[in-house]
Length: 336
Ligand code: TRP
Image (cartoon, rainbow, N blue to C red; front, side):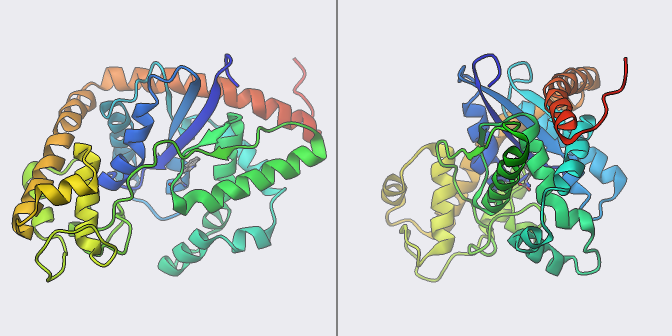
């Protein structure tokens, strides 16, 4: 609790430009919490996590700034929310080390994301990739978060964070709040436009599968035109029609329609018309975010000052927890 408010924490990695899926499934829902006075929200750019896969330094730097500006452009108010870079708060790495000593090899080897990523990056199965969930636990536990909005793919990591926290508390008393998954208004799950059985991802090798938040209107329209559908030729909302279902989900997420309304709206129309309509709806939803982004990214002074202010605010809360942990495990306090 901070000032009587529940604490919510989440974040995204800065490994690329975020997708429409990240926006509709997560960021947009975070923005909806802006006006909820009963929660204090922390959202980080998880750049420490990003280097578990090799990154080009200049690109990582650029993507980090872009993500930070996109958080604000999408509507997260940096005065109400704490928006910061993970690497600006050293306590994340410090607590992660300690938690590593309370986490078992067996637990980490069972993580499905580790198995997937080590298959994908077989030439670089580094120990950071292995202990990734421990760092994530540190992110969460440092702020005594009550709630963590995560997608399905991160639930296993949240579960481990709860296990580690419970284990630590079992030894040292109540140090950490045990975090819960926050479901909120369930975010849309957006699939790849090229393979509707796969989640839309910023690391997709096929650039036509993902709409990136900074894609211009022409690119958005082109990607929707090429979206994989089926050969039925009619619009229906069904698991048997994953391509069309995904387009309906996207259309509904940006228009507020129900699937029934959308199916009725496009009754008798062809896929071509429908794809155009989805593309236009998406482009006009993203346009204001993109305009605000363009304004912000050009304002270095403002972004820098927000980064500084918010890193200090995050550090204040993080260090409070870290001091407690240092004391509990038996480290000597530096004499004043
Ligand atoms: N691992 C998360 C992802 O890739 C990002 C993340 C890092 C995160 N630390 C977190 C999410 C803490 C929620 C809470 O999506």
